[in-house]
Length: 141
View 1 (cartoon, rainbow, N blue to C red):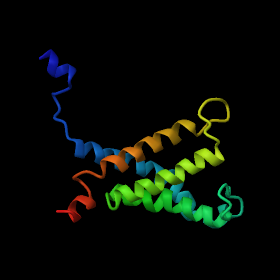
View 2 (cartoon, rainbow, N blue to C red; view 1 turned 135 degrees about the horizontal axis):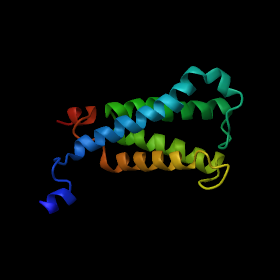
View 3 (cartoon, rainbow, N blue to C red; view 1 turned 180 degrees about the horizontal axis):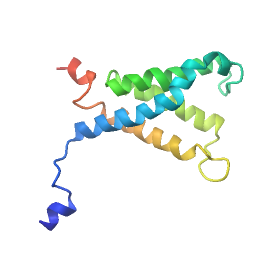
């Protein structure tokens, strides 16, 4: 009995349900906080959006909008999950590297922790895929 309690066997494991929870929770947060902001405030943000790749502020904002909004919605649905995770990961990693300069500790590192959590979740979904409860799974049956 102690072994069952320590291993938490009282609740059956379901990796696919875990991937569903990860997809929905993480990408709903990403979409609501960052994706919707870019969709509904694109014209206001375009003039002052950072341009670390030297491709133009509007182009960079468009790429960030795709990563934060469209890819988030695709991941929530579990459609093209690995590709969407890769694109969203690249978008967030570029922002962390070139805009936030990998800040994690200190007074100016207000986004470091959440950035690392998004990156870890997206990398996990890229490696594991969407799981059984996804559109990807329905399309490959």
